[in-house]
Image (tube, rainbow, N blue to C red):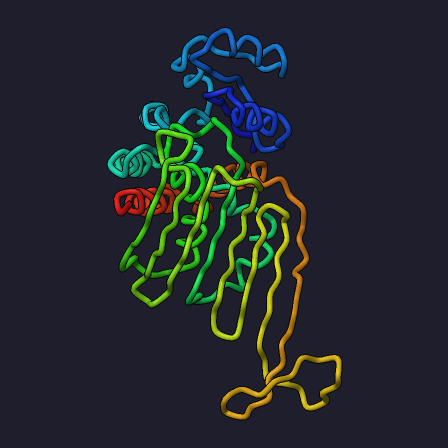
Length: 320
């Protein structure tokens, strides 16, 4: 069933969402609202989509609201939409504070509405290719580097970039956080541009996460180390590799990498590059949300997930 959707926020990312909502067979885009009326008129003309002069007028015509505004306004729009019993998609980070996110959780439960948050890396094809093979990682290393872009510098690099990796890590490490050590430095912005965090979980897993938005090159990589397995994901290049240690086969030959462990057991290294199925991650997350609404299933990244990522991000900033 096609869902009647509306969008609020027609900036850089908002235009991408607008275009994809038009492409999707799961949504009928009713229109959009932007507080900047002149910009709204221009976007409406460029994309052939009606704009609404008031947010409340848009809300009356839709079933699903897609919020792609600066984080400062997420809570205000989401609260109004949930109070009007609309399903809501919110870009990350979900809100400015954990307290605001909890209010949204309570409203979503009260009105029995679905809410999904735009942690888009969950839909990255490289992550999807190996997600089911990540089991009890004990060490995680993440690097997310970006060239400087003034857009987004109103918040710390932790909330701008690192939060992507925090969400990924929390989705695979099923254990409470035990200890956080972090540092952050402001270089070109009023908020930290470079940050590093060491997060230790109660099950012994340790995650080391480095983020910068003043790098000379772009990089989005994460590596997982678990018993007998090493996994590497390149979110930017959409690549993944897996190295596993298994008992060596008896019919060994010179082409196989065989070694003996400390117990004298013969082991073999297996190298694998999983097949990556190309997808548009933003379109996938929007379609996934439509599926959860139509089939009444759990959202891939629900409010509780996003609140945990936000809470950890804020704790990392607090520990600077």
